[in-house]
Length: 312
Ligand code: EPU
Image (tube, rainbow, N blue to C red; front, side):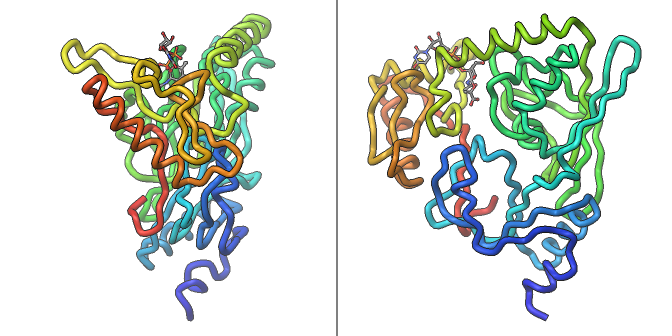
């Protein structure tokens, strides 16, 4: 039996070899994955994780690809995508004046924001205009000025890297700015707590947040959202804006090949036609170096970079 058949044989999943995952990201650039697997059930995911562990196969999880740059050389091992119907359902359960929403990890954030607004469920508006899936948003505690995923998270269910089904109460975990202490795992679904209110109020708030973003961020361009995390002032520990620091370093519009610092918001590195992942990475490095020189602050990339041979 080959390693590939012991890994994938009899698995209830869609499997693509040499899958063009770079094209599936918001950047729309970068190489292929050796193996892309889309399990059709939680059992299939458990089996896959157990087999990957036994074969010592690297595992990466592809969410909506909104915060991801895939290297031009692609990635090795297994990339898992929870885009099958089984991982894309949502169920609502009213409990007095709060509603619990059980949401599959593969559910798209845009769709969920709209769904919540239509039902008059308040609390999730802060995710308006943030691309990606629920699974990815939980992992990185996605959010912005108006709040973060952790504000509404109640329970997280996942399969860990040993293939064990696990569950955590969000209140037992520590969520911080764009990170958490959630152990390495593949999130399969979450329970969110929302408050019932007038659908018009929720829709208005979503609209307001969306308009603010459209005015200040290059939402129509290919990017991975903000390229760098907002740093803290080393003396006062107050949060600083990475966008402002890059802007003050005079880098708006600066480009390397097809990679360009957005003119609209300097913390967005956008991919123009013909850009490669290498262009983007070179520009990330250059922005870091220039900002360190002008402000003394080391910017840390927010965008996740996947590379062959580098541990996920
Ligand atoms: N600014 C500039 N020049 C720029 C960009 C911004 O001077 O090129 C100034 C703005 O004028 C403003 C300040 O910097 O006074 C802060 O800018 P903004 O309000 O755009 O917020 P941000 O801190 O840059 C954060 C998140 C965004 C999120 C927005 C709105 C990070 C790194 N960024 O941006 O998240 O959309 O708040 O909620 O946390 C992301 O995570 O991918 C992302 C885009």
